[in-house]
Length: 280
Ligand code: SF4
Ligand code: SF4
Image (cartoon, rainbow, N blue to C red; front, side):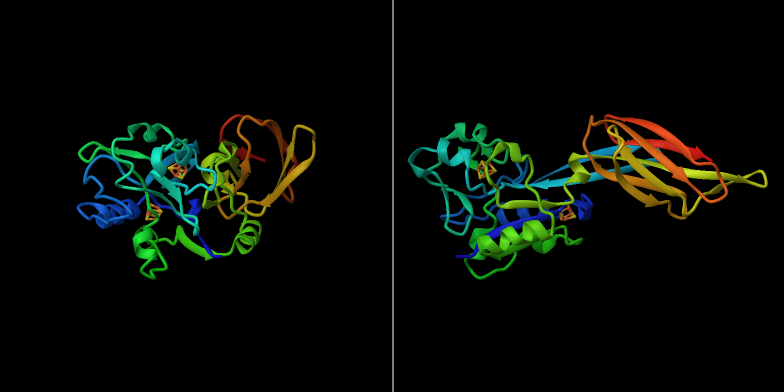
């Protein structure tokens, strides 16, 4: 049977918070019996957007990670809930029963992703329902997906085998897979949040003036002297090797540019780093 998946492209998220607002619009003061009691207007949110700043001025970028409930297949929250207060639907969506879960505050700590929030007024643990009340009415998108202006969020309603294919072709990953919860939320370009880069700019001096070295060839080798990447500098003389492991040690940059001597630079990678302005 077909199941629901949410795919989030980290590279496309601009931290506009439309997803957060549309979730509030759908759930604050709205009761969806069987799916969710009303969400508080202030305080807990059912989707968070965390940011990470990478690099150093002026070579810098920011990655944003929208994170709702992951709708795990192997959900610790389901195991922790009494009386079947949290359950997995056949279509992959995990629901907290708004009646049975009343008073079960311990469930807030049962989620390793901190996706469950405590509603003090209603004495209820609550979280993202993947807008199941709308999907069951025939909607094809949740409110957050519908409101995302950049297309960072998308829904998939497909068979498991097709999803497995998509994971490979689109290079999708789950967040913190070491938690082994088998999420139904997948990320594209997750490296923008979890991994790091080596970047820099190449320049030359022509007639006493500094000029960007466009089209210089930069290769990156690891500590074992294996080439792991190659690129050409852009019209600003910039280059960037992304998707590298934090604290992965020694790397060597080798820069070649017609008419200039080849230059090598050593980098010890801890976090994203700019090698600065490199003059040939
Ligand atoms: S992310 Fe947390 S709340 Fe959501 S299904 Fe997984 S364990 Fe449960
Ligand atoms: S609506 Fe889209 S772009 Fe805006 S914060 Fe949410 S995921 Fe990011």
